[in-house]
Structures are given as C-alpha cells and as structure tokens.
Amino acid sequence: MKRIWWKEAVVYQIYPRSFMDSNGDGIGDLKGILSKLDYLKELGIDVIWLSPIYESPNDDNGYDISDYYGIMSEFGTMEDFDTLLEEVHGRGMKLIMDLVVNHTSDEHPWFIESRSSKDNPKRDYYIWKTGKDGGPPNNWESFFSGSTWEYDEATGEYYLHLFTKKQPDLNWNNPEVVKDIYSMIKWWLDKGIDGFRVDAINHMGKAEGFPDDPNPEDQRWNTGYKMFSNLPQVHEQLQKLNKEVLSHYDIMTVGETSGVGPQEALLYVGEDRNEFNMVFQFEHTGIDSGVQGKWGVEPWSLLDLKKIMSKWQTELYEKGWNALFFNNHDQPRAVSRFGDDKKYWSESAKLLATYIHTLSGTPYVYQGEEIGMTNVAFDSIESYRDVEILNYYREKVVEQGQDRDEIMKRIHHKGRDNSRTPMQWNTSEQAGFTTGTPWIAVNENYPTINVEDQLHDPHSIFNYYKELIQLRKKHDVFVYGNYELILEEDEEIYAYTRTLGDQKLLVILNFFGGTPTFRLPNSLKVEAKELLISNYSVEENEQIEEVTLKPYEARVYLLK
Ligand code: GLC
Ligand code: CA
Image (cartoon, rainbow, N blue to C red; front, side):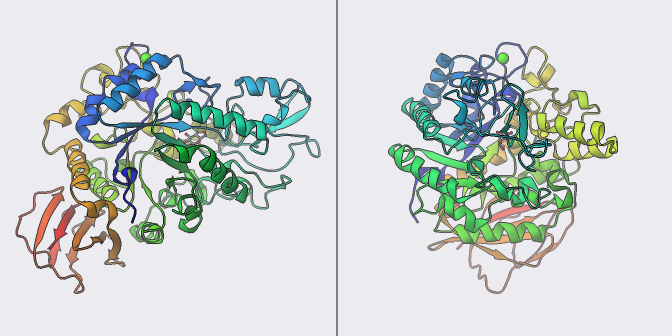
C-alpha cells in the first residue's frame, strides 16, 4: 500500500462559531482558534479542518457563502487568517478548509445578478425552471424540509436549492461557473492551505431533464436522493477538477458523499480514479434511523455496525482510503448516541475512541469529542439555532400539528445543535468560551466536563485520545494493517485484528454496559502480547483466552 502523509494523519474538526471567542461578542473566531493551537498540538493532531469561515449571512452557519474570497467579519479578517495559517504551519500542523461549491448563498453577487432578469449573463450560474401545473417544476424534496424549488417573483421562475432556500444550487453544467470556481480553489491553494473537505459534493450533478422522483420519501441522509446524488456527471466533474487543479498541489481532499456504499465510494477514492483521497460516508451513522430517516430514534444493533463497517474496511483495503468518524457538526454527540453519557460516560467515550482510532483509515476528531462532550436537551425550541431543526419543527409541529413532545424528543436525540454548543474549556462562566453571551447556550454540564480538568487528570478522556494518537504514530499497523473481524456473531463484543507483515493488533471492545465473556478464537495463536491501551486497568500478564469484560471495556493488544 502506498505510504502517504494523510493516511498517517489524525484530523481535528473545528466549528469556528463554537470553538473559542476572543472578543466577548459570544461568537467563536479566528483569534480564538489561534489562542488554542497549543492545546491542539498537545492533543497531537496533525491536520485542522475548519468548517466554513467565508463571508456569509449565516442562514446555515457559513455553509451559505456570499464571498469565497472574504472572511466572515464575525470571525475576523484575512490578516487573521494568514496569521492562523502561519502559526498552524509553524507548529508542524496542517490546515484544510471547507469547500462549499454545490451551492452559494442567495446573497452571493452571482445570485443577486442571476435572479435579476432572465437575460442577465449570470442567469445560468444557477438552475432556473418554469413551474408545472401551477406548482414547482417537479416533486423533489429539500434536505431541510419542503420543496427544492423556490418561486422567484422577479422573473416568474423557480430556482433549485437542495438545502435551504437561501442556498441556491450552482449550475455545474455552465463552463463559466466551473472556471470561476477553479480560480477560487487555486487562489486558496496558492495561499498554502493543505487541502479541502468538500461539502455535499455528490449532489453537484442533477438528473437530466429534472424528472419527478418516483420515491420522494427515500430517506435523504442514508440512501441519498437518487435524483441528485452520486450521478455520473459528478465523477466527470471531479476528474476534471483533479486533473486541472488538485493534482498540482500536495494536499489532502475529503469529499462529503452521503448515500454511497463502498463500491460507489471507490469511484471517488479508488487509487486509479484521481478524484478525492477519501470520502465521508454515512452508512454507519444510519444504524439508528429506521423509517423516520435521519430523525428516527431507534435502538441500534452492534451486528449492523459490524456488518456495515467490516464491509467498508475490507472493500476499500488497498484500493482506496476510509475517513473514520462518529462525530461532526451535523451529528449528535457519539457518547450520548452510541455510548452511555451517564453511568459509563468516560468508559464509553474511550471505547468509541478506541474503535475509530484502530480501524483502517484516517480518524477525525470533532471539537469536544476528546473531552467526551455530550448532547444537550433544551426545553424550548427558542433555544435552538440550527435551520434544519427550526424548519423540521415548523413543518411537523406548526404546519402538520404533530405531537410537540415527540418532535422535541427527536430533536434532542438527533438535532445538529447537539454538537454545536460551545466548546467547554473550563469551569468559569460560559465554560470559558466567551466573556459575553454565547450565540447558543452552553451545555450545563461544563462544570464536570471541561478541558482544564481533563488536562490535569491522567485518566481523562483527553489523555486517552492523546495516547491513541501517539500509538498510531508509533506502530504502522494502526495505519496500514489489514482488518479482520473475529467473533462475527457476538452481539455485545466487537473484536478484530489488524495485520501488517509480522505486526498484529488485537482489538477487543465491549460495546455495552454488560459483562460478556470474550473467548479468543482458536485460529488466533497468542505466544506473547503487549497491552498497548485500555480504558480500565488490566493486569499486564492476564491471560486472554477467556476474559470477562467490564462495561464498555476496550483493550488493544500487540500480539507477538
Ligand atoms: C453539508 C454540511 C452541512 C450543511 C450542508 C449544506 O452536509 O456538512 O452542515 O448544512 O452540507 O451545505
Ligand atoms: Ca468573537
């Protein structure tokens, strides 16, 4: 397998609005990030991914860009950005930006021109259609509730928006759009950034002729809408982008591609494909979704997780590369969702970390994950900020009259604001995030869950992450080893080996609060072993042929 730096890296995602506020206006900013670079260095991560920091009216917190060349004034200036980049590089880390080019803001000058008249030169920068039978051009449904089409009075036509109506989709069939986007990407790369996380990019191609979707209820985040997900045009465009722009720089790229399985993913990340280095897939985050799709609150089964992830681990091995994550700014907190954020908070957070960091692929840590930050449950819809949550509530409760408590329950479990409450730095007011009033409330558990306490506690979740990250750097088998599932049918224990030449890891994970017995399969001969990491203290010479595991116990052995 080809060795390369981004396979060996651990990436840390920053959601700038919620990371650190430097000037007391309640909004995280670039100077705030700058003040925490030593913290990130201490954690040991290699690459920082910044969620969007471009100029934006913030309908979707920066994922609606009105100027690709400007920094959002709430976050700082271009000078602040240049300093940040320099300081990141000065500490031996890299920085990747979010690239949002499926759509812009409706306040981007291109769209303002585009909507002004049918013969404006920018008209075809976006996708405009006439209505059908007094309604929108087709039945496509937006990711954030309602039709994907918005009627625009000025010209009597509809424009397409897969996300909010303030996020009109760019028309990638227009060579002028392609040219302008390429220049912008080059401009950032020439500044010396180290790559991109490419937002919602699998939606850049739309079904030809814009036909009705035969199955509009198809669940968006999991299976992806067939009419605008992973179509062949996407690959044509990405190969061209790679050839003309990306391949000229030593960078990393990770595409966000909902709705792909491993074989489809290989079209994006296959080593001979020249598109992206890796993609974010969402099959595993769909295990608790059920018929309600994204908003479902279903029990999940370990067998499903094993089946899905084993498929990804084996089908991509030596052919393409995985991105590994449970948390990001769109997902609820994993320790609340797949662990136990009460009784076994620390143990289960460490268990989930062990899992992500011992699989084949590049691990991503989302801010606060490294201290086990949890979901929030605000009582009132007024406390929420996310446009997806607010639209969902309006549609279900206000418009359709569905049961408020049920909808709030789903928001508590699945809403994106779970991961967007301010980073919990210390026990001072507002968790040390701001001296003012934060744009979204701080999770009230900050007196017990915060960075400062964990830095000083050798058994903290933070220090566990630090150790895991160091282990990857020390043993190649963490990065390049081949994954093999063992105890396939076990409903509580997830165990596997990773093998590279004569190095072999054995990973044993008790995913729940019970005390099941681990039995070493006969096929695995253990002559000598070294315990590399565990979330309980384990006797060094304990035999592992048969072990009763503690709740959420995780162990990683190097077998000899
Ligand atoms: C991606 C982002 C999400 C955003 C959407 C529209 O899924 O991760 O936060 O709302 O794209 O840009
Ligand atoms: Ca600020």
